[in-house]
Length: 149
Image (cartoon, rainbow, N blue to C red):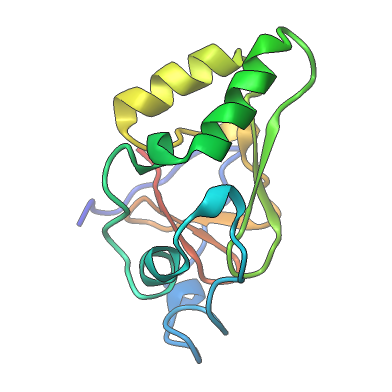
């Protein structure tokens, strides 16, 4: 799809075996119940575990009022250390903390432009996130997260 890519530090590259067939698509089991921000479990499970190239529709995150309220609350707190934590919908591991090195407003503007939450390298928890040679970004648990552009 995107060819062979290599990303320098701090990116941690992974190999294709992370996304090998498992008990439930590319993961050991389905996404957790009671996903944050009232995200649809069926949609999340399909995208995270049975998909390698696609995502929810562009702008889906902007339809989640609970998410937008949390982001707005964080944004209104100004230049504090407050950020939003993003967890693997399968394993529960912390994957991203954002914003870091930018304001919430800057994070939201970039995310809206891309259509999905857009994370920078310093916002990634590389203990649990890998980038494959085609740019696909995945969790170490086999969850499809998107693509490193």
